[in-house]
Image (cartoon, rainbow, N blue to C red; front, side, top):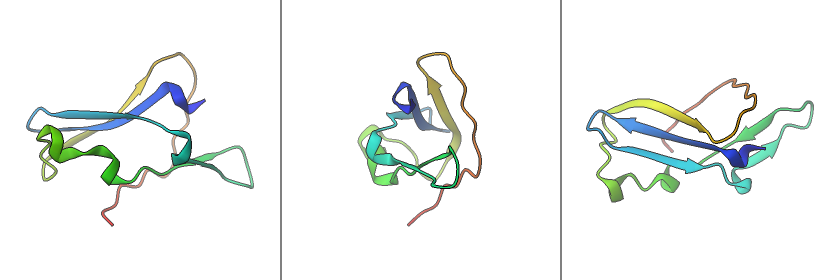
Length: 79
């Protein structure tokens, strides 16, 4: 399950933010076993921690249990 995974970002100013993948972020793709995870940027509350949104350094995925994760078509977009 995806509830053992957190996803987030690190900025070049040293700030990091991680969010657990909530069930309302997940939908199943009907033609196979893939799941679509869609997290609105507003969920990250970048300003609250002083995260510099103009200087993203990396996407971070944290696993809290062993398992397997396949990634495809990662898209980060500003609405």
